[in-house]
Image (cartoon, rainbow over all chains, first blue to last red; front, top):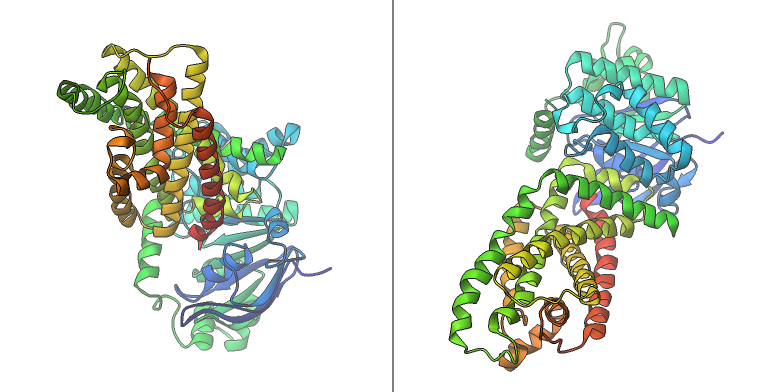
Length: 265
Length: 256
């Protein structure tokens, strides 16, 4: 079986800046894969290329068997995406948000109703489904966004910083749901994070991204043992990028992540 | 084709729900036409300096003010789109397999229906001012269609601007810059014949002129359309088609 995601020397330049520099990796179906790196490492740019929102400058990638350049529409039919930013519409209810997604993904007839109910049960929002999303907590909004992204049972789910700004309880709730999606639907999940605990406890495999390049890939335990007996993922990060995960990122990245925190908080 | 229409309808329905929940905007937009008709219109009627044929100046400008209120409410539509981009809603829509042009068209349709609310308000003011309005079903249908099409044109134009400027601050600047010239370089409050040649050349290229022209033919008693409704509708339909194609092409750029 071909991998759920494979990239070959995938590159994106913005003027003279090389945001993503010839990254190549594979994700087997049914795995949870983490792209790890500080703000500005190129994680979001890499995701945007894989979900067909941004054309690569060079290189190629296949998602769920389809080339992102040649068959973007086929890719879109098979993926779900949860942006880092707030993507549920606050002026609509959960029901209405889900209805819009379901229609755009072409769900109809009996399936339309069952999938929406399934998504509401999955997110635990059935009882508040008729309330405006702007009255929800950050954790509830994230769960709704997950529900919107899994409605059409995508083969591959992409999440950009899925738990940024969430409190520990809400964060665990997101992790449990991601594991449930993999277990119950066999979804492949690619997420970006700069949270070492998230990477350690949730991901089967990690790639450490630093200044647009992949430093190393492997399972969390492989990476740790490659650095030393008692090493943590933080140590792994220092070893492969020469810096700590929290210190980099430019003004714009910091502003954006703070703004996201504010909205979700 | 069916999938296309379903996607369009889904986007339009979501947009209308949002508009219905926040009616303040609709009503605050009603103030401007009141000012124009009640103050500007009343004074200029007394001047009798503008040749408007068989009808009073007030009756002449009423369709112009309706067109203006359609323009003003649709032209700031792009602000909402930039807001959705800053959040992440645009990104989510664009990752779906929906047709790009269906997303654009859905938003335009909702703007069209909101434009009809503006029309009801302007009709009400005009009726209170005892302006002779046409109530025949065909005339009303002509006005309804014109408003739908006109709102679609200017909201999609606004979306195009949003896709180009990408920030709210710049959008507000460009929006302010465009509305008054579009309004004054049209036949909304004075006939084309009064304009100097250069202005007339601009007015003929201005889609607002065609909206005003078709409204003038269908809204007020004794009003008459210069080009004829068929020409007006044809021009507007072509302009709208081009706008949707351009917008569908630029819209994905918002998610970069």
